[in-house]
Image (cartoon, rainbow, N blue to C red):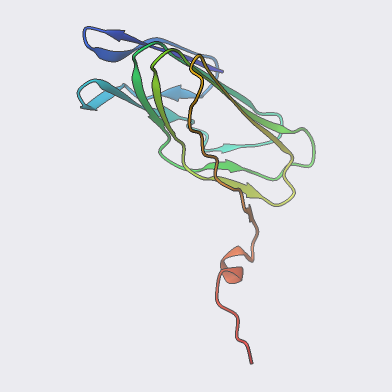
Length: 150
């Protein structure tokens, strides 16, 4: 589990709360855009298997601007038993901006998983876009090649 909270301090968005249980953690925040806090989530094992439960809670307080990303794809490996869980709870307060830019998710065959996104906001409108997931199989690369129509 990873709990994050961002607050506006001294004219910029600052990561004020960072609590984690397990391997899911973050790199030190950086500021290539002065006021915007850029943060990279890290999951050193690199993949999610049956029985794993990753929960990310992020609260972005009023007037904050945060960009959160990951260095690589989330890989869901095959499992014959328990489900792998990934839950992301994102809360935006008044006039907050969150650029949520995770990398792709790769779902290998025979996987059992549950992925949940929950976005809440105190404003009346926000824009959210979720990509589509494509199962990854051993023939995936071949399937992307143009077919011979003869």
